[in-house]
Structures are given as structure tokens and as C-alpha cells.
Length: 186
Length: 223
Length: 199
Image (cartoon, rainbow over the protein chains, first blue to last red):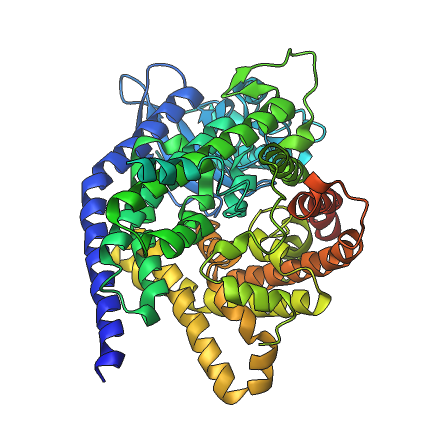
């Protein structure tokens, strides 16, 4: 009987010790992990919406499951200057997480890729700042795709369009209407 | 001391876990597309290896044989999770780059294999040194492989441009086929250098605790 | 909807083949693909464990870990579940389906440390698949594994009986080089899912 119980007891004790060790370590490292995530997000927000703005999380449900988060960009006087969307799209090697900023005229203010697993030298070429800068100013997503990296560049094209559509829905209309700050929710 | 030194250097060339024992093949091919990822993975795995070797060496006398593998796995998984926290907190870019392969260190044959082959039979200091040596061997192998693949496949090293802009890199090296190819050639190279025959297929991953099962399985499952 | 599911399974088998594109399950791929019947036996066992592991780990994560903020216990709990499941399956098979146990039983302990099983169960969560998608991806992965194994067994039986291979390349190196060529072949599938299903 001892032969049967002892292994199970030892295994269980080891499990319990390890799991408690993990919860302690988790509590200790969580603030650092959260800080790192926040820093990365803030860095990306500034890249896609350059200028002197503050950002806050926006709880609007855009109805598009690809949009993981929405941020409002506000200028110095607290006016809404635009919205930023975190869009997750399926690329070649997994999820491509993009951040797309749309200003108050309904045009793209910036695009950056915050997480990707695309092929280095191929799909990854579509995720660099030089390539993504072509999106600035677009009101419809119509980029030049990279030949040989069509899957990745198309994914990003779709992400930007999703952001533009969500922005239009949130600001109550087309780009032209969005230029009049009267329409829509903040 | 001499013996311990031998234990330490063993893992670097003579019994290099990746190129001689051929353990832990999955992350080797997956993360060596870029040097920074290769080194990151190597360091993470070395940390887990040293810690788990130490703990298992301390506990092996009280762990009954029948549950030894599950116990080893729990200890290893614990350390892998801790390393996951550390990387996520202090090197988030590496965390993103390694993806699922960071938690997969749990089933990396190198760690389980050394726990079984060495740590469960030796003292704490020797086990720690073995872990360090094997970890360094692993990291070196990853470093060399990723250097080859990054320079040939993307023209950069650690992000710095090496090949001139005009030279088109051979993207294939940064992708799946390149991984297998470079790995195979490196094993052959090491075999040439050490003048030993390269591992027979099936021998490598069978320095794992499941060696007996592997052999049986390879022979067609006749128990 | 159905189209998306088909795309998922096809994608897992051909485009994102677990061994040749995602680099998981390489150990058994290299170790057990020597003979055709062991290749098939191992792949079927892997598929079986993959689907069962997904069926248990996905609900465990969604209904137990996540609601309590215990996501960080993912790695350790998943591998324990997989190890326990494999043990359980072996015992059940031995007692109730001895014929199946004889055919597949020997591969089962190996599957616990198979990167593919832990890898897919973790990926299902990080890719945010729902339950059906997770099961389909597990099924597709297993079938992809089977395909790669069978193809490779064929390749290896020709290569390894060849006496002209230089000594330094014999064994693991030539096997890996052959795998590299097979991987190249599979790269040709990249546009397949989008082209066929428009997804």
C-alpha cells in the first residue's frame, strides 16, 4: 500500500510547491510585465498618431471581431483628434497585430505592426516602417502590395480597411462627414 | 575539479546536445532565422537547464521511480514558466519572436534527457555544471546556425546589414527548407571535425528518457 | 462557415504543415519514419492524442484558468494534462481494445514529449480559436503529420539503403537534407487555401 501512495503523494507535493512558487513569481513579475506591455503600446500609439496628443482607451464595440482595441487621441484642449485601432489579421505565419491611426478627416495618420511572425526577408518586408508609410493620408486602403509577399501585405491592407470602416462607423459617416466634428460619438 | 571541468566542457563539443546528441531539434530549426532569437532561446533554455538539473539532483533520492518522469516534467515546467515571466517582463520583443517555442522548452529533449541521464544520478554541483555546459553547447550551436541563416537569408547579423544592399539574400535560408539544410550540413561538419560518425537517425532523440520506446517504435511497434 | 472550417483543416495539413512549416514534432518525424507501418502507426497515435488533448485543454483553459486569472499556469497544466491523458489512454486501450494497444501502444509514451501536441494545444489558445476550430486544427495537424511521415518514409527507404553517401553525411545529415527538399515542395502549397476557398 505504501508503494502505491508514496509516488502519488510525492508528485502531489512537488506539484503544489511548484504551483505556489509560480504564483509568487507571477505576482512579483506582473507589474514589470504590465509596464512592458504598456510601454510598447504607448510607443506604437505615438508612432501611428504623431504630434502632441494624449491617448485613452475607448470602450466602443466596433462589431468587428478583428479589432482588439480602440484608443481616442485627444489634443491639448481635450478635443478628439482621431481614433487608433488595434487590428489582428491573419498573415502567413500567424496573427499580424497592426495599429492604425485615423485622423478626424477619416484619413490614415499612421500604421505600424506591433506583432508578427512573418517570414524574415519576405513577408516581414511588408511590416517595416518604410513600406507602411505609404498608407499615410489614404481614406481607402489601396496600397502597393509587395510581390512575393502578397499574403502579408494583403493582410495589412485588410487591417487598414477594417480600421477605416470602424472609424467611419464610429464617426457617423464618410470621410467628408467626419471632417465636420458634429457627427457621432466620442 | 578536473572531473567537474570535464563534465562542463563535455556539453560544448564532444557531446554537444544539438549537433552530436541531436536533441531538441524543434527549436533549433524554428528560432535560428535570426541571431537575436537564437541567442535568446539559448540563454532561456540554459537557465531552465541549470535550475532543473540542480533541483532534480537535490530531489532524486526522494522521488519514487514510477512517477519520476511526471515529477521531472513538473519541475521543468515550473522553471520554464518562470523564465517565460522574466522574458515577457524584460525582453518583450524576444517574447514575441520566440512565440510558442518558449513554453515548448518544457518538452525540449535536452532538458528532460539531461535530467534523466545525468541529474538524477549525480551530485548538485556536477549537475549544475552539466546543465551549464550543455546549455552553452546548445547556445553556441544555435548561434552558429542562426548566423549562417541570417546572413545568407536576410543579409544581416543581429540586425546590422552585412551583405551589401545590392546583393539579394537567399530567402530560402530563412525559411523551412533552409533550416533543415543548414542543420544537416552542420551535423555533418561536426562529424567531420570530431571524426566520429554522425548520429544514426533515431539515436539522437533517443538520449531521451524514452529511448527504449523509441527503439521499439522504430522497429515497427512489436513490443 | 463550412468553407472556413475546410480552409482551416486544409491549411493545417498542407500550408502550415506541423513538421515542414511549423517545425514541431521533428524528433518523432526523424526517429520513427524509417518504416512505413511505424510511420503510420505513430501518426495515427499522434492525431488521436492531439484531438483528445485539445478536447480537454481548451475547456480547461477557457472555463477554469481564464476566469480565475490563472493563465500563467497554462504551460504547466497543459503538459500535465497531456501526460496524464496519455497514461490514461494507454491503460484504457490495454484493457479494452488490446488490438489497438498492440498497434499503437508503443508510441504513446513518446507522444507526451512531442512538441507538436503541447505546441498545438498552446497555439489554439494564442490564435484565439473557438472549440470547434481548435478541434479541427488538431485534426488537421495530425493528418498533416501523417502526410509528412508517410512521404518521408518513402523517401528514406530509398536514401538510406544507398551506399554512395559520403561518410560524414550518412545518417542524420542526409535525412535532414532530404527533409529540406520535402519542405521546399510543401512551400509550393502556400497560396492553396486562399485560392481554393477564397478565405
